[in-house]
Length: 102
Image (cartoon, rainbow, N blue to C red):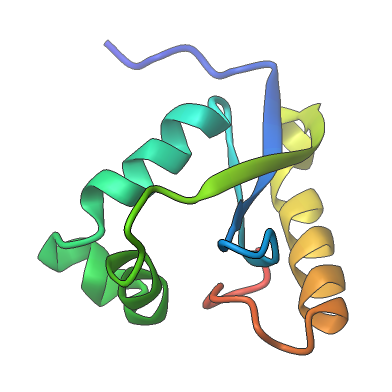
């Protein structure tokens, strides 16, 4: 049976050791998703999906911190993720490890 659709989703960022934003994503449980990024960093499918993000995670000694930007309705998740990714990629000088905007 399919899991029920969440009412809200969080837009989150993974942070490097200097607390700089390296990746933006969306999840109903950002803490669990940040842990999943860390736990999956060496799995072939994860590496193939985003090799730059996987390489960055593999180079860390500890799991990265995360930060929640906003909690939005489920239906707004893609637009919000695209907004934050584009904005922060501009602010960070193109240093985000996202493949797509949203």
